[in-house]
Amino acid sequence: MKLTAEQEEQIEKAASLIKDGQVVGLPTETVYGLAGDISNPASLELIFKTKKRPFFDPLIVHVHSTEQLKELALTVPEIAEKLMKIFWPGPLTFILPKHPKLNNLITSGLETVGVRMPNHPIALELLKRLDHPVAAPSANMFGKTSPTQASHVQKEFGDDVFVIDGGECQVGVESTVIGFKKNKIVIYRPGAVTKEKLEEALKLLEETTYKVIEDESPVAPGHLKHHYMPEIPLVIVDDFEFVGLDKPALMKKLRISEWRPAELRLSDEPEIAARELYSQLRELSSSRANFIFVCYNPKHVSGLWSAIWNRIEKAATINLCQK
Image (cartoon, rainbow, N blue to C red; front, side, top):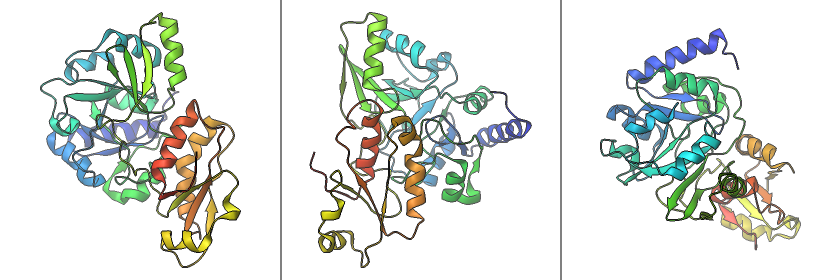
């Protein structure tokens, strides 16, 4: 992708702002990030302040080359290096033992750091123009719906944050986060690099001793019970059972006085469903509806659907689905 003159100007301005300790809205293939210089404590603090993010939630660091891992990680397991060659640049974050000089604000005091290489030409070009990698959580208020368009970031922060417009994010949900425990690769947060894709990669690498498992942990962002929440309540209901709901009981739980629902409809294609998810939540929140409902589909159980429903379940105010 050849960058336009306007994009070149935006990248140059963003690089200057980051070097001055400011934060900028950065497009990636997953969601837009709020990027700040990892070597500048004031810049890191500004990320937390701007997002109203608690300091116990670690940040993911973005790099443009594996060479930059030297200032981030104490060691990189051999299996991680092999997987980086397959999946980087791309939506896969590695949890690694942190370098002792790395600022504790990034890691929330943990002994590990999350690192990824984004697969977006603007993000990579910006990173190449900086002296250090950037920390870049999603560019939204903490716990709210992530942005997949520059306009989402602008609506969230107004003129307080400069945003590079890189178009719509192609993946649409945050990166997969993995760590390593003995002969296990642990998925701490599902994403576009699915369990199945990791297992295929292990077969390709002839790494037969490793098993891919799923778990949640404070080492990864987005582990809290509620996250990604839209501006109005989201309710998960059983597949096609919305008509039979007890309306008065649900209205009482949602603390609403009128019945004005809007349906979140997911594409049958998971790649499209993921790309549209956050935009749909934002659009429905701006409609006349006072709550959103989504019908659980029992066929959506593997691959990218795992990430999509992980986000929906954490975004939900109420889950009435009996799996």
